[in-house]
Length: 83
Image (tube, rainbow, N blue to C red; front, side, top):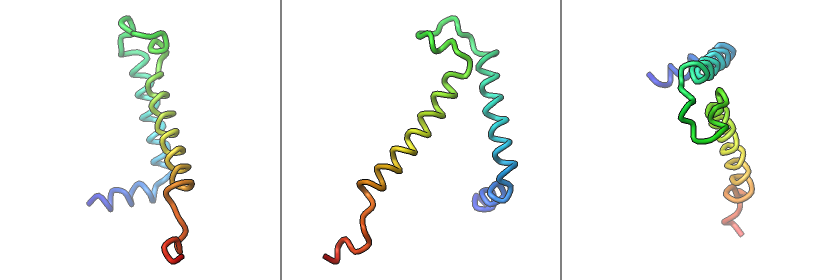
């Protein structure tokens, strides 16, 4: 069931990307117009879509750091134990 679901979106990559961008835009618009900003703790919380952008940047940073760490520290040669 889940495999067919993933293959459906993989075969329609352009549609998947467009739908994801539409959902992101709707989240930013909902944050801008529906969420009250009067009790914000910091000035940056008053910026519409701040937490959406912060979450996106954080995810990208986690992926980049994980890939760098994997290539620099975790991944080894295939013949590592043959020496």
